[in-house]
Image (cartoon, rainbow, N blue to C red; front, side):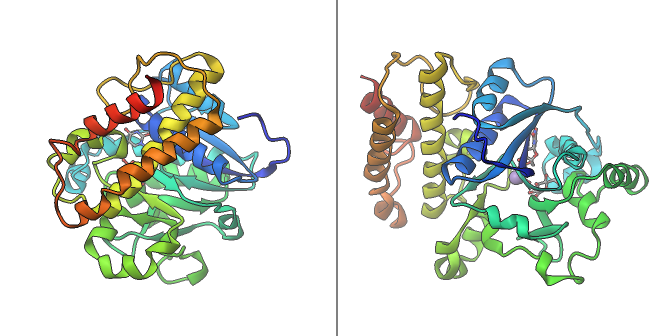
Length: 336
Ligand code: UDP
Ligand code: GLC
Ligand code: MN
């Protein structure tokens, strides 16, 4: 995780985290970009309330950790239609347009999982994005290509003041600002595989079976995020085996990173205690990170052998397959 001096400095991937929980997601975004050898810069915007431990962990993974002011729409009426009262703070995303030291950027929500190198996204122009699975004439603002500009930033803030946002978050605002996206230029429509929502996998499984193997970025859109899935997976009816696989993949990246940061810096990366995830008080164990990775993936394969049973609907969420139990196995396997 050393600074890569060969990185092209003009382009950057950007993400955002205003809480320590979303920092867990941002860590995985940065880690996956590195794993897949991006040649671009990586930037994470954080707000002042993000803990110093979380910022330090992000500093191991990203080229830049940038502190920004929280911008909140405060629009509870529209947010309640979205069913996500907490998303007013997504207006903070708009600050990405102030990153004018880069000529072009790709924004990635902190709840995305990058599955391969996606540097080709920089060939696209502002504003390129994939259709939203719920309302395809709108783009989803979890993944988009943009050009930083203080003029655009100012116009976006003015647009927010005058018109607000129809969903109370950045997506409603950006869609009315870049209002010709749906009809003007098809090259600005990113293929859906760059923003594959887990929800879409559930609602249109045949298309997923046909095209899913080309997935490049998975987006855990919705209130259930991988970092809190343990508690939700026991009650959520919408989980399916494909989603489970992506969630496992997310946890494998997170666990790997958690261990790597710990052994490199002798510090605990921020993992709020109410979340699922690697045990915080494991015995400090210095094993070579490559061996660690191999063991994690070996275990990953062992646990995903259960997929068949899961596909047949024989998931024992509260018993032997409960995330807690799988996590305990992971901890035992790695640390005892
Ligand atoms: N976000 C954040 N803090 C919050 C809520 C959201 O930093 O409290 C950021 C984060 O980057 C997140 C993005 O805003 O990925 C959009 O929110 P979310 O992904 O939860 O929305 P969804 O994609 O589920 O609609
Ligand atoms: C969405 C997008 C997310 C955005 C939110 C609020 O569904 O996935 O990126 O922040 O709506 O507008
Ligand atoms: Mn998201």
